[in-house]
Length: 169
Image (cartoon, rainbow, N blue to C red; front, top):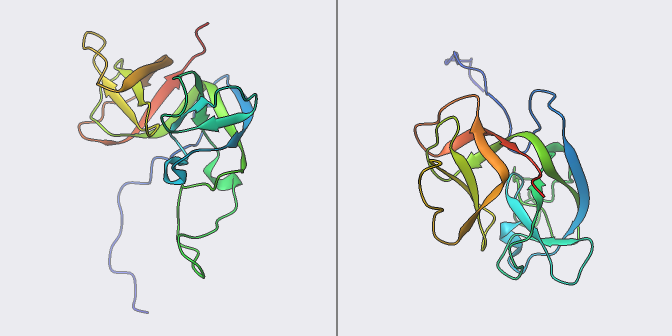
């Protein structure tokens, strides 16, 4: 191993799925039960599985009833991506008890650029988050996170963003 040859000027802002700024928050426990386990990713939105109290899904089997955003990436066992590896991953296996954020400020990965104040939407089929101006229509196949909007900084391309989610009944 050689000597360090690069000095990074910027620190990493955050990790996807971490709750930010000590904001008031509400969370609930749930059991992951997605048809496509590849959608069980920290920082994505989940929906309630029909006729189940605790099961949630990140895919289209649900009727779009928001359950929360999967949080706490450092709290789950790392099982690797293939047998015999411990590669980094934000994907969680089905039948894992997880914590979902229903209210608070969180770091997520947006699939689109976003500006402070833009609404945040989630895709029914994957749980992937995106942003759009408040005056724009919801992107196809999505619905707005309850009270969800981009906060703190503008993001010129897809990537890390801080969003606020609030329960709106």
